[in-house]
Image (cartoon, rainbow, N blue to C red):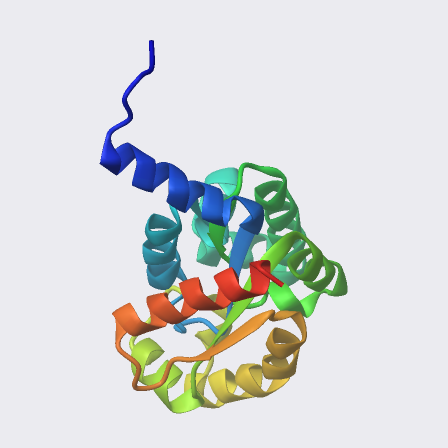
Length: 193
């Protein structure tokens, strides 16, 4: 006796099978580039789970990133960030929103390049400052001139993001839904190579 499968179930299976070979999709970019929001929407579109490296880090540390930074310093934070990235890449396939500084360590860049389809959400310093100028949660921006610090970080990290990215998406002036479309299209094309 043959079992009938509903059309909706058939479509869901087809979508999952199409993207099954993607493994992880990792979003990289500066703080404020939209990694978390784009990541959640992309995960939904690809029928994958979503993981936020910063949120996982806060759960593991038992405190906010700002509190951890203040108590333990940037080096300890980067150590834990590296550990969390490796843990997330060892888990079930997912879309991962990474922390903005994850690319600072060569080992992390290697993991991103070899264990994920890495997407760089590129945003201008002007757009990032517009989004972050009132943000008090990011420890590296709690300085006398946070705008200058943001520009400095952008200059230091841009080439590292480009180095790890399989796909680069410019986000300035692009509607949210179109960015998600571009991510899905980009990782799909990259996975089919």
